[in-house]
Image (cartoon, helix red, strand yellow):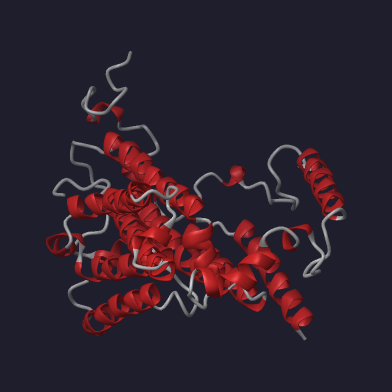
Length: 236
Length: 141
């Protein structure tokens, strides 16, 4: 029964990713990405990894989606250059048929599948990962740490150093985003607006076209920007 | 979004429940799934929901962006301080056993503190990144 659910969810994942590839409406693609994350979370739950599922649902489906929507409200919700789409295997493919990328993808996929043949069988108690310290954690954590949830005692106590590294990585990511975004923030007034008092109105996919005039990425409005306002702006 | 009555009312009801659920996830992690990371994300999600419905400015009156940035660094600091305080008591870095009267209590204290550290950091990071994304292209923030 578990196997059927696993395969059904995996099939859903595959279908969702194909649907994402075929989307030209970025708003729909973001929605599908959220669905993808939720399906993965369901898969993790079936595999008894509730903590991972929780994180996937909160970060993958929740927060990433919000960030992508915020980005869409700036750049618009449609793909403007259809040539970029690699998936157009149909007759109206641009200039040449994408056989070479297909071959590359097939070879890479074949190598990956070949690599999984050496993986230990799923759930086997004799797997290397279960033969090192896992038994000790499962048996002794109640006496040594005193809390019933082994996941928490491993994360917080046995592997506290790793968790410290994780927290530091998260913090570093935030610092990186801040440096990147605050440095590139525009000082002059453009028509582009992020979320404000109007909130989600800006996220309407139909509004995407209206942004094309002052697209941040187009670089067409370079003159409107005072040089030196952003780092690197002074570099000739 | 000031004209969307249903969204506004629902948000006002939901935000306290989300905050409470985040604290539940945080302090129930000894017995069920969850922990500082998940709790931090859920806690930040409440503010993000508020910002989506009531606007960034009103959210930043409650939770200014400098507070979220401060949180991001304070959590890591708390984590490291716990590690050093066990060193000061003669044990290894992040060995919580010496933090209480007996090893088990020390483990409880240590885990509680570092989970709070993770919560504060993740909350601050998530909210700061959201603020930066949402405020992009805006003059008045």
